[in-house]
Length: 296
Image (cartoon, rainbow, N blue to C red; front, side, top):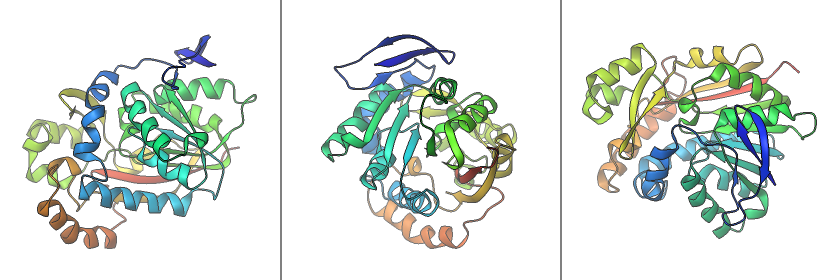
């Protein structure tokens, strides 16, 4: 049994027994991700892209350092399920949320093949719709110990201010948010603007914090942040525990999608530099931010 959500209000109960994925809402960005779901891991998956593998390994190190040792975690914008699988294998009970049902289907296949399906619940919804629905039933439902959202998922959300209030209601006292929004400053795109949609797109990303990005064959609107800008959006309910640039020196994975010597060279050349210069006020292509709920 699941809820259909419209503007955060449960309207009716139904089940999608065939797919095993709970459907809460439709979102404006689902089409682009639905179209790219089957090819996403081929181009950008950790097993097929050395740069993605390096970045995700560092992201998982941060999760191990900052998440509680056990409990209930929600993975917002789970995509094809790499983070969900990592968390499930470590024993967490994971709710995997994504606006793309095709992405969720890929993720569910991974989880089933790994034998972790008993620890994962899949929900088809935007972050906003899921959080509003859950926050509205917070007294009846058990709170989460952590919220995880990797690789730019929250940058696709239009109203983070409302999401802050909903997330505050979803988390238990002193629960943590481990998130990775897109950063305004991506040096590699300045050197190769044609890889990011042109000079205008790169400048709009830097100066306005908004720009279009190509997801597969589609153009979608994305929000970009300086680290302190994102932290302020979740204040005062949340306080920063860790802020670290991700992809300031390392090139974005989509710039070199062909697995081979070029990807390996980038990891060898820039991996150590990235490790030694983790704290950056400018951020990077992504920003790793860990926030703790302090208002209880």
